[in-house]
Length: 315
Image (cartoon, rainbow, N blue to C red; front, side, top):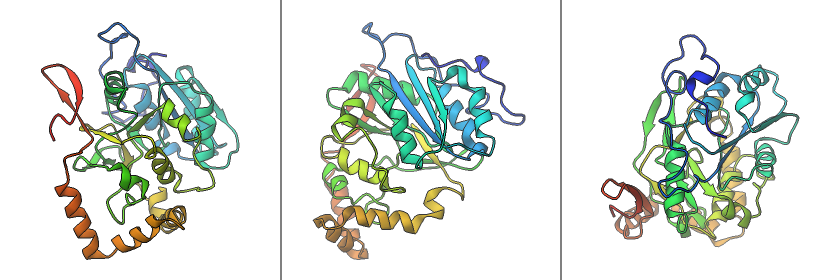
């Protein structure tokens, strides 16, 4: 499916302006410069009683201007008006269901099981993508898909009103440290799920499912699995962001989230290394070493001369 234009979608609520209400992404050409179709991008949104933010999330997917989108919404039988919002956009959805489920990650697994895109990701119902992010992801995978299977953008936050409130320095992720579970916020920063894309082949190699036995930190466990097979590359662009609002899991369930991370690392050497790195001076030394050893950055930049995305263009 080609993404609809803003004129085709329902009018935004009164007083809503800017992205993704009254502005849209630029239109991506139907075919790549080499004449081949753009890779299909499959997006799943797990939804449950977040009507306040859901419509913005949906529009941030649909207004990407991308020519090959598959969009699935899995709702957990919401009771707050979410279903009426989803039905407004039903003509542009590949499918949606509203039925009881076993939580966010169960909904994500349901959604991905009925998709077939070459590039996949999920967007939570209170988060948003940035304009033109599908175009960037499609170009990177089309140009560098033989090397890049896992892609992240620059980390950023939206505020409750959908305005950008924080943009972080471009991160650098090392595969071995991801595998060890050290990107967990308390040690070497964290890996932001919003704005992340990966290949279907990588998804299938780790079992084609998120572990629903880890109800709050399954994304952390998934990144560790991915790192067994692929490097995480960072494109120097904002692709999507987490909405900072005080009902989100990271605020109300922080202790439980941390506990699940520790359980995921239990009985591994990573558990002991993580405990050691929580000591302030040891952590500072580790961060300094990471900064000095920058020769293997997995960073993707756009080369304006060749008009292509390249790896390590600016080491």
